[in-house]
Amino acid sequence: MYGKICGTGSCVPKHVLDNEDLSRMVDTSDAWIQERTGVARRHIIEDETTVSMAVEAAQRALENGNVRAEEVELLIVSTFTSEILLPCAACEVQKRLGAVNAACFDLNAACTGFLAAYQTAQAYIAAGSCRTVLLIGSESLSNMVDWKDRGTCILFGDGAGAAVLRAEPGEVPLTVMHSDGGAGGALTLQSRHQKNRGSGLDAGYIQMNGREVFQFAVKRVPEVIQELLEAGQVTLRQVDYFILHQANKRIVESVAKRLGADIEKFPMNLQEYGNTSSASIPILLDEMNRDGRLKQGQTIVLAGFGAGLSWGAAVLKW
Ligand code: ACO
Image 1 (tube, rainbow, N blue to C red):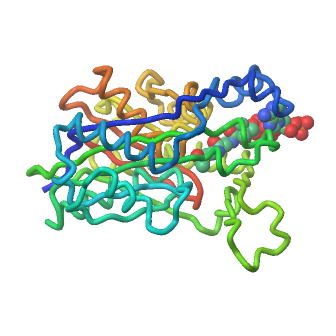
Image 2 (image 1 turned 120 degrees about the horizontal axis):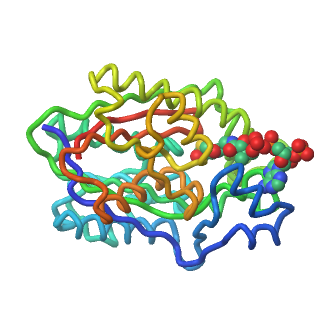
């Protein structure tokens, strides 16, 4: 048995912060941000929270998949930006959805989180532990960036995406995941809530060596996609879409080029949302599902990368 995605949903905050708004907050410009990242605007929470966006995205996914909340047996929220740490965000989402039969936990693999949740769901279903799984990536990155640091605040946005998986007979989709904790210093976020935090000045804010992260992504993502396709005996031409974590347009373009694949197969929506970490893949999946770009039988590659450092990819039939 494997888990087939039968419904998708997403939710982004109402408030939009565009590059012109940002240029009034830090020393930057629309031209610089668009050229270096491709991001034009991002949605930022006001009344919304990581949990409230997760609940809305999940409700839309359940409705889209024609699945009742009580049918969900496993509920995973991928996040590192939840406003509540105990109970886990997944339990709070369960309560609000009425998913009373679900086992719930959060998972943090940063921007690779949705891939990690997808792989976990497949393993549970293949083991016969459950039949219906709800996966959610929900992030409020605007809570975690230093709005005075132009090197990071321009990149990120808030939002949530969700997918419902149902057990069906068939092969488990291939997923490959890697981590390199030794290189983790390139992208960090220290908790504000710690006794021994040294100088502690930067605690609570994302710290990033942009160049290092960029070099890592453009090397590791094509590598892991090649590894995945070789293992699955799938050719580049057989893939209809490569749905990458939406970090940066230049990263996506560089991955397409290094693979020798047609850029048309790499959909992007980062111009609208910025980098929403583990929400970016399910938000894009939901948009493509709803506007009819995703069609039954297509071969889709998902690829995530980010803090850890961590990276991974999965190949599935829509
Ligand atoms: N506006 C204007 N100028 C800026 C800005 C800004 N927002 N940010 C930096 N600069 C300046 C720098 O100060 C520097 O000026 P200097 O030459 O006078 O010193 C110059 O622009 C170049 O800075 P770099 O940091 O070298 O710029 P780079 O071309 O590397 O672009 C960027 C920076 C966009 C962050 C790039 O490194 C990048 O995309 N990295 C990947 C980041 C990423 O995607 N992270 C997340 C992935 S993982 C995850 O999703 C969590």
